[in-house]
Image 1 (cartoon, rainbow, N blue to C red):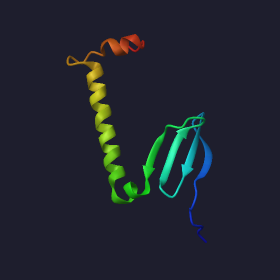
Image 2: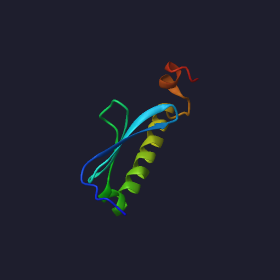
Image 3: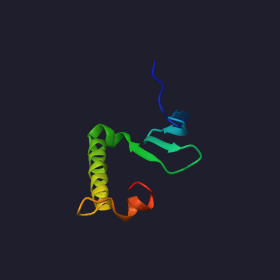
Length: 87
């Protein structure tokens, strides 16, 4: 038997060694590091319409662009990576 989701439902979970809070509400779901307000939100409407898949693809492509920009035109890792000790 299903129960109508009429108010937010919060649950704690661990991803690796890090604690997170998952909030499921009538509007959608939100996953945030425990003790933080900002996290990843997904609205039910976006999930059902396919907009969520589009957002995932866009974020992946933006990350590839950011990685390319950090490495520079000649392929070297550049100042950002060397400042982090990854060279």
